[in-house]
Image (tube, rainbow, N blue to C red; front, side, top):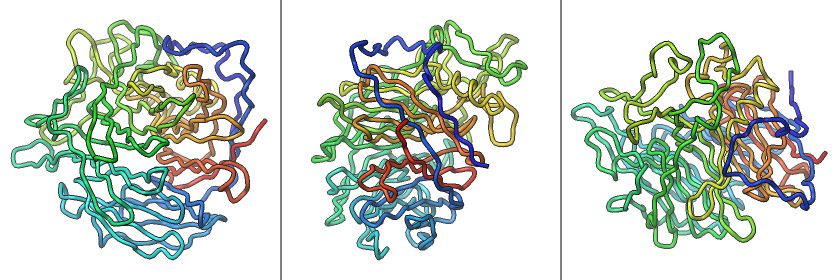
Length: 479
């Protein structure tokens, strides 16, 4: 059964607790009401990341293992399932633009350089390939179509045990016309306070692990998340050089409520707790412009390092309401308890300052609309993930429609819903819709398709759901 719920005046009466948000001007015209309406769901087998090519109206969906790129036409019919095993062990990401498709594959030998493959979107012929850094995890094509930018995570091989290997993280910048690849590296880059460098025996260059990458509208700058390090980096694409690293900061749970327990017998027992902070640890990020300025919206999923010979996770312990909450044994500073993720989405300006944070809205909204799925894992009871990152905002994308700019955020846990936020005025961001399709579980990759490129003439949001292996196309409709 297909189900979607539209929320009217979502933020009315909710405790956002986002002091960095600025209220919209009362003189401003009300933005148009929009809602997500599902129009097509396809079983895409192990779906993770999705890309849409406007030139061919084809959708490309990654399947990690076995490494396969699945290609669909505008009606959701499978065109081809392309094996990528010849290029490595795991297909991790894909992007498409103007008839060109790029996909990245991890090396067959863990820790070795990965490969970027460039395809013709129509013929599906391989045009060229390029070597990128170790453990490529995300790829995007710059808005001008000239380059592909890859987040090379460089995770340790063999954990942190003796004899293991910890390759350096990097950001690869590939010229799509020639296949020339350059790596932006982190050695010698100054790190501000709050950036976590804590892998046993790791240098900063080894410890910094790029997770996701987005590019500014002018194609000059890449914004890169360093999730486990609770940081973001900026990369100049002309020189392939890291120009700065910004500490992501924390959610202050003395002001922003959360439900921290999976065993308190009450789903949605949201409260504030002095001395508790949530490391933002953003996963996906999307750069956009507003008022001539660069901003980035991020999903504060959170993530822990959990390896052989090093696992940073613990629980608060004791008998209080925080007893079950997962926290880190490698706190950034003493004197506070640090949990994983912010349970929110946030917007930063070009200087890295948070200008908006959704606070506790995501937990409150999912509780109000889908109480039976609140903070739940697939097949489990509500509240089962309250002790561990809550709704887990992870995937996101940004697009323009109806004269406004919208962010679309996928919640990996709980209802597996997609949140729509109007970010036209970043400091006055408002959540305007929450939608889901029953049977879709764990949205991972999201793609926005503007009306001019859409097969239906209506803006689309395409969502790849990792656990259910389904991909759903929503129309973004007015009213």
